[in-house]
Image (cartoon, rainbow, N blue to C red; front, side):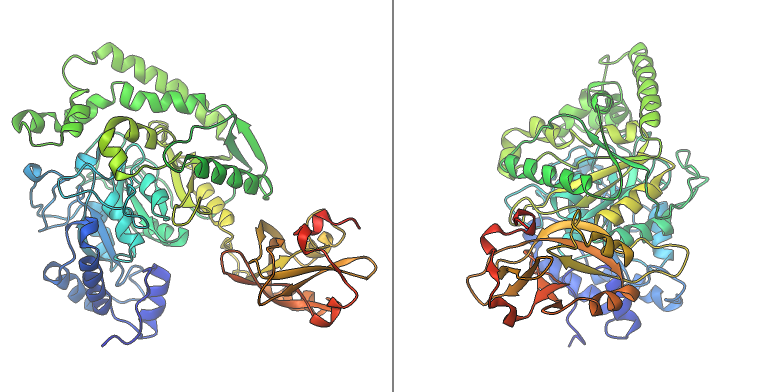
Length: 583
């Protein structure tokens, strides 16, 4: 019998707290994961599914580790099945390619040494060639939220294992977007480190000069913790390089694409609306926003599949394809063969190298001190639609991702507000290779989380305001005096009556109703807890601080009004915003 209910989402932070409190053991978590994998068996998440036969020795190994010194002690993780786990078959999504490695991939070894528990090998688009999650002989991996939709690829199973609560984090790989697109489609954080920051030794190559190992997680902090464990030079890996562990920093500016973007698929309009909402949020934030021409990013993206780099994929796998006809998926083989033979001569390779060098130079100048943001994907597809048109649908998924590794950028994909019920939307933040701290810091700020500092961490609380304390009104200065910072605009649940009090100056009152209420515009601010008490005691009656329910069901501290004030007050509920009131 379980001591406590195991959380549906297995975040590292929550599991660490439960282990420390003695409320849960790693073995109990693994047994639950095995049950969940059976529950979701038709979603085709795994190639080697969770099984105590191979997981058991890793659980036993935890007894030799001090949880206080092993940062990932007891954390279950998935391994994309083009990354080696000693003694377990590596398939790269192709049955005929399978082999059993004797050693862990370098990254896997570091994770195991830190106490993490590998629980299975995850499904993928064959040979990591695809962004849709449907190109696998082991079955199409279903989206974690809507089985009719694609999961994103090529790291499909890795992402879905996290989203379905079967792992705390998962390893993917990324050459053209495979560590970011599945994150966006399954409402996860997907971190793609700079080239060489994480060793690719023990990874089946797609394009060795561009390949990265990546992590899917439920939070920015979880992904950064994994980075802190695995980052570092591997002297046996010619692609490995020394890049310092990033801290949380903020850029001097945010760059957004100038002009309209391309959106597609059955939720095209919803994706476009979600992007515009994100842009509005960024424009109202603390970091200055500039708009830039994105043609250079498009030019770099075109080089990946319309240029000689596709020949690098053939160099890695061509010999196997030639020796094993009809083994690979038809669409996968077609893509790989486009890099074979005399499609590209030596001159075309050098021409592309010179062009890319020029684009890198321009990108470096543009991104100096900045973070560039785009939608992670401009839409999604149903699995049926991808089967009907596998090439074009896949190409669309990489429109905003393909440039990244060619330009030697780091990236983090983070979820934003859903486009509609269970259809997530996400953005990707890009920065130069030696500026990974910028994307971690900005991602934290965008998510409304506290940025850690070298000093004692400042504890804060969110505060919902709906009147004179909003930006541009008379008492905004009071919010600033108490150390508050604006986070975002939001709406209450549709349960509130909004009144104009007969005071000087006029103030609004927010009263919650059992029925017949409306949704009212509010602003969400973040205030240091040490200031919050003084702020609350200074509020004159009939106003006060209580819990305000937001449209997504969350409750935050905010301004409410005592019921007696309704008498003699003007009902302004129909206006839904203090900004529409004539003072």
